[in-house]
Image (cartoon, rainbow, N blue to C red; front, side, top):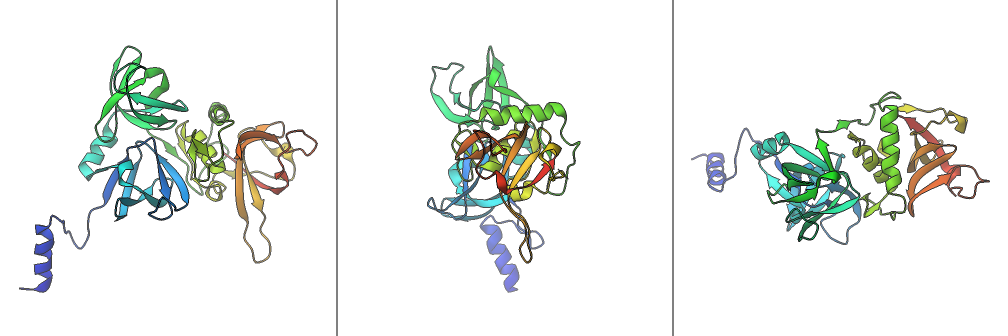
Length: 309
């Protein structure tokens, strides 16, 4: 018998599907309030980013209890298996079609029963997505990706009907309405005082581009994860004068391009007007771009670009 046929039969007996030399993709949904995505499958490895509960990811590799995943940010990194619920393609379709809600608070919990005094099942952070499973009084019954159910105050949830994505190279000055701009700024201001965390994107800790991403995400808009990616969204703003800036513009700091060296973006914030902006540096804070101001941001001289959506 042909060796290739023997190998195929052996793999089929082991439950591995073969179709034209291709194996089906492995899918999972984030089970925890946020999973920590690291460069390598090791707790001592650097944190690259986080992904939120309810997000569908692809599993591309595994090592022990670690799983390498590709998230929609887009980002590829490692997290532990306990942070995921693996699903086949049919289960993913059912999950995607299910009625969902999004958690709008900064931080909270899913309770076993519709009472604040009942035992907590797990924690929640803003942006977590849950399947809707019913309502009782002021409480909403929700379902985790694993199928476990619990209760969340209805006031902390709103219906989730998907996100509008603005990818690199997309968007312009009319992509975000004035009302959306104000709501984005309001979400960012809720996080004032939250400590800086490299790779963070929640009220537990947030970095500069994470602050931008979560503020947009809470308003149904997905931006790329990193500042170096976000600068490629929307329209360029003329930086010859700060007077050209408008409320809601994204401000980018770094090193301008020079002979033989490309532009390097190291920081991002959201412009508030009156020469002030909100950003995460040491903590989420509001600073002035004007040297004479008491709350002047010490690295304002590194402002090199702005984008408008």
